[in-house]
Image (tube, rainbow, N blue to C red; front, side, top):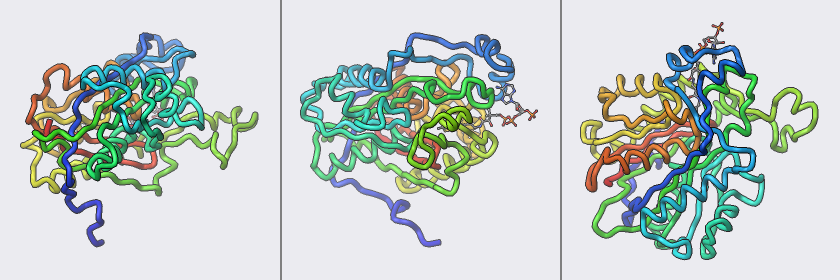
Length: 338
Ligand code: ACO
């Protein structure tokens, strides 16, 4: 197979940096022990098979846009940016407040970011990193100066709470980043994005679109909830995140040894361990918070990035690797000089 365009190194004509990050998770903690009373499961099974101890669940009145706006305010404060300075808002989500308008438009209203153009990106758990790459292109080609990218999901709203195969895995939250050209940094060195629609049915929500509109029959069959082939998803997650890491490192002429901190999608500790093992990277280099939040979909890598940055996992000038995987299939990776 010939090398695709995506696999060739991209040299941005104007480097783009993440100049601030933020995150938000709901107050409500749902523990494994509580799940024991909801489905046939155990704290021990969940910890051994996933590494998850607890997750956050948004209140009925707390929507994806509310969490997204809270994370965005946090990121704007961190970056020293005002709402009026934002030219573009991109929200990666698969649980929008409404099918339309986009969640990004709802966030714009909440923030008062009146100068921004707004749209959502549907790339499941890869939504934040896809958004970072899209936003970067707008800055690199000088269409925008300041871009707000958010990964936000309220997966609790589409989880089947009677399905023990899935309901133990997910949580709610949001993470955000402000992108800008920073003259003194190389910023985002390269981002790789890929998809494989042939695997669209291993992790999906069949109902709710025009193929299976919401009606009583479809709701009774739970087609309006997330469905997953866990074993296949696990396999694809390891393979695609490995591939994404290799491609982006090669593009930059780097190896995993050059990376100070890896921030992976937070789905399952065993997926991350398998990656660490095959990449020959010590687990200590991976920033992990899935024990506290579970898999928060598009928010996961964004929350982890914010947490890692704020807790000093890396410093200005260090190289970090972000790598994600999600329904679609979609996957992506990015090497960033912090
Ligand atoms: N509690 C107790 N038992 C359970 C539970 C549970 N919560 N869930 C499943 N089981 C049972 C199964 O029914 C099965 O029983 P059986 O052998 O009698 O049939 C047994 O446990 C083993 O099931 P497996 O599917 O083989 O378990 P596995 O070790 O593969 O772990 C898991 C399952 C955790 C879902 C794993 O496959 C996984 O993490 N897959 C990837 C999930 C993922 O990453 N999803 C998100 C990707 S991106 C995005 O979110 C959008």
